[in-house]
Length: 590
Image 1 (tube, rainbow, N blue to C red):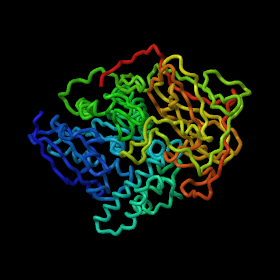
Image 2: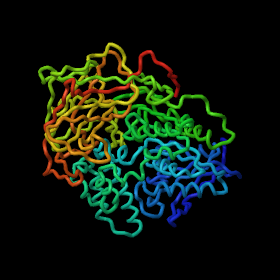
Image 3: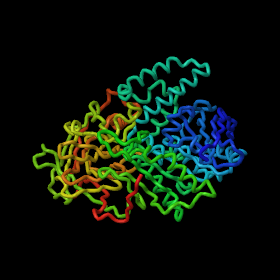
Image 4: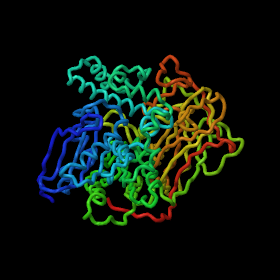
């Protein structure tokens, strides 16, 4: 009803099972009746319209006009809600209690959907694991599948740029909350303000475990640092371990340059596989976006006007999704493909039946050093010979390779200033970055799916990191990043437990660069960069084999790094390439 009158209820208390009350705002039709409800649970202040409307992607008044009740709630211990905030651990029970309370309200018909991005999406998944009967569908955007590996850590390395900035933001809000309650936290507030005014200096602070404001205002920071293994601290809140318990349809939304892309794709794939014949109820949209930056341009690339989330009209997209599961009179969903991705390079949206597409061909390009060892190396389809020489560089933790673009969450223009595809030539000029490049392509190359780099490598240290970056080289020399990743040597066999390396011994390292969809045109080239740091996106490995959280500037160790290239110990780029002939795809209009 286009002219629907609206009742807005502010500061509504919702009781939890332990007696704590959470506060919510409610938008609902003024007319009599019972309606399906859409629930958003946020730690970022339900009164912040940018956070709860723009970032979450549903405009409440439009949802009410479409016949929904909209409920936006502060999570436990945040802003208007009572209790203490412990990230992730209370969201399952609190989500279930809120859903059950909402389903019992006289204006609700008992059918509920949940929506929102990032942490709001985590609240959806953690509640869905508990299988509350009233929860009928969810729309998790830009979120993780595991709060160790695809949220706090990546390949065993701390997501420093994101986790520290996020933690300080949470701590700043907690300081304001305590001040309002009459507590004296002036000294802690001043320290947080100092750190946030100079975030780049903040990232270099060591040891990480000794940041006073976080110790007091966000004890979870200490927990994250003291549990670098994916151990029993993390397992109870893992979504990836519980896909078989999630029975609801889900619309997963992500960006190619979002730091949670791997987690979102893992959720789509895992929930599809666990659903069996219900797998068509899992849908996926991926745009050329960074976290909370879903626009038509990013980094140094303008994609297209219809690349922006606003051009898709995410309110309409999500309301259409929910209508299929929350409204009995909704028309049956069309036979549209469950996946919609933006193909960079061709700059078009395309429908797919799965992600990665079934027609994708896994292709290897081997890293081959230059004969003289001075020039950049090459990428070739043929396996190198047994006598191929190794390449070396020195990794100095006191002088790490600076982050240049990618799936970052760093301060500036909200968190988008440093994200996305950016020119890597300054980075590539460093002596601790090895580059390997194909000849100019004779035909267009479409990469559509997972990207990995496998290294056979040796280090002189007892622990170190290995980084890899996929780059598109333009004829004018520009080298624009596509995706990148990292693996901590001690976690080369998985993040559940650390395995020290023996200095000088060759090991295989698999670096997960995530996913992409891009057409690299003829005349351009493909490049891989190899190094051992990407700072401050990731924390810098001190190379001493000890605890990262307590490392100081005084115990950093230089490491001599050796990349093997021989046929018996090859290093290579692994791509999923889409055949030029196409296949069962369906170009779609936004």
